[in-house]
Image 1 (tube, rainbow, N blue to C red):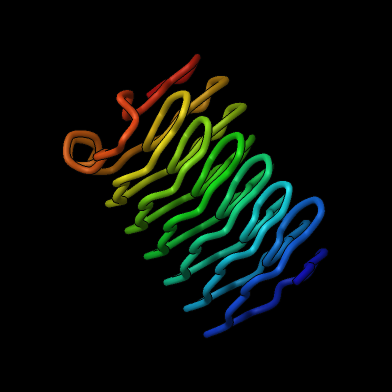
Image 2 (cartoon, rainbow, N blue to C red):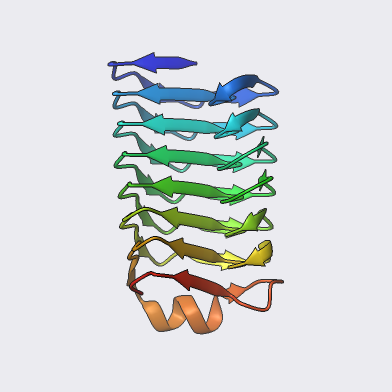
Amino acid sequence: MYNDASSPTLTNCTFADNSADIGGGGMSNSSSSPTLTDCTFTSNSAYDGGGMYNIVAIPSLTSCTFENNSSSQDGGGMYNASSTTTLTSCTFVDNAADADGGGMYSESSSPALNGCTFTNNSADTGGGMHDLNFSTPFLADCTFAGNLARSGGGGMSNDESSSPTRHNSQKLYEQQFQNYQIKKMYNNEAVA
């Protein structure tokens, strides 16, 4: 599904086994504000954003699942560029990126996540999530477990002055970054 300067509302939809040469195997949002509830993205693939690709977009997702999506570059489950994405009670599981952000990749973006789970996602850097170029993600009561990064940041990786804000940070870091990579969180020129 391709959205350009539009605001669709979707409920109980499934995007499965789709592919795109560039961005958004399941859905691509450009200057758009889609609202999704109880939607599933599974086994989609693309160069960036196997499940969903957002550029200058403001999507809002509630109780959505991203499972087994893949990208040959960044953002196996979701890719955000200059976007403000809001996710509530969403699940990212078994997504993979060849480069960064197995579950989610954000560049110059401000995603807000509340009660989201990242499990068994994999990438070279940032198995669960990778934030880049002054991204400012907000995470509240999120769980990162069993994610894998080959280079750094099994749960989350923050590069180039990205600064995540965490609610309930002790719980998030000490108990819920149970990932396979030795460095559970990797910060390179980041404020965390």
